[in-house]
Length: 116
Image (cartoon, rainbow, N blue to C red; front, side):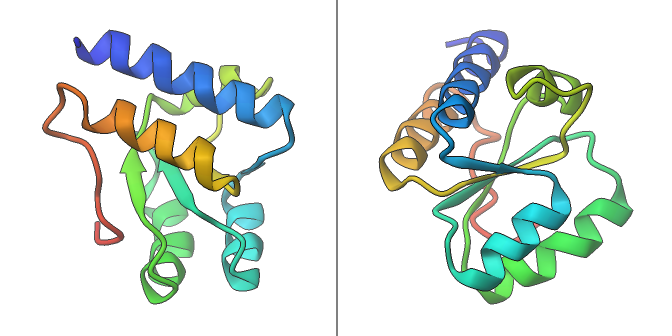
């Protein structure tokens, strides 16, 4: 699967999860959900700023929440009806499993395993 196909499929699943209210969008909401222990996975845009990453990555590492590279912030945002989104938390375990499968299929970027 090409990176473009992988990113489209991942954005599609993220959008589906968002419509089903199984996601949290944005760095602050991801942080809040991580503190509550509600996250199964976090999809991070590869073009996220260092400042945004510095706000969320240490907490996700401490909580052992897996982070994966996703589509661009523009593509992630479009999937959830926003201009841009740098981090999207997945709260549904089955949805997270499907996104992980897409991330691992045909790509060596895949999972950041909780450690950027």
